[in-house]
Length: 158
Image 1 (cartoon, rainbow, N blue to C red):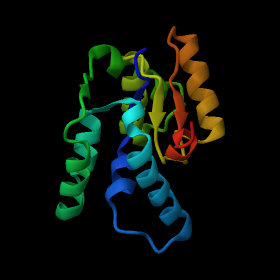
Image 2 (cartoon, rainbow, N blue to C red):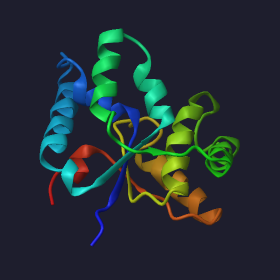
Image 3 (tube, rainbow, N blue to C red):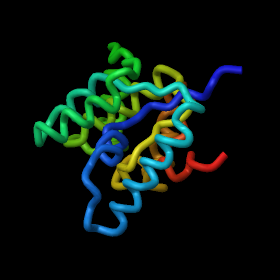
Image 4 (cartoon, rainbow, N blue to C red):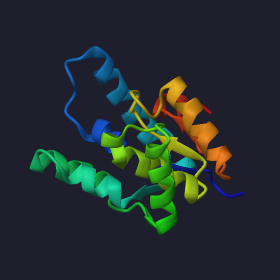
């Protein structure tokens, strides 16, 4: 039986490799991410895209190296014309804010490539209940089955 496929949005490598935060909620998310990485990641086939590489490369050079090392061996989903078109639809229909086009590309890559789960800590406009509902509805209306959008906490226990 094939393993479920998981797309790791950039926040996963960020939380996985960052120094522990002083903010209690962020620190908890970091620990959950590390727990998931240690205990569950091998239960899934993991994927990223060039968008993850680009985002993970930004900012502090030493932190970028840690983020990139964490995902260096994961296969890249191709950002095809179809992926770009679906991402554009997310933005045009107001599902993802125009200034967050990279997030639309993360979702579109997972959608077009038939990924089972999109793992993220982006709780503002990806893994928020209302956002998930809009994303799922739009995906189905344009002929795609959406991935299950969730946080590492939701995939930690079997």
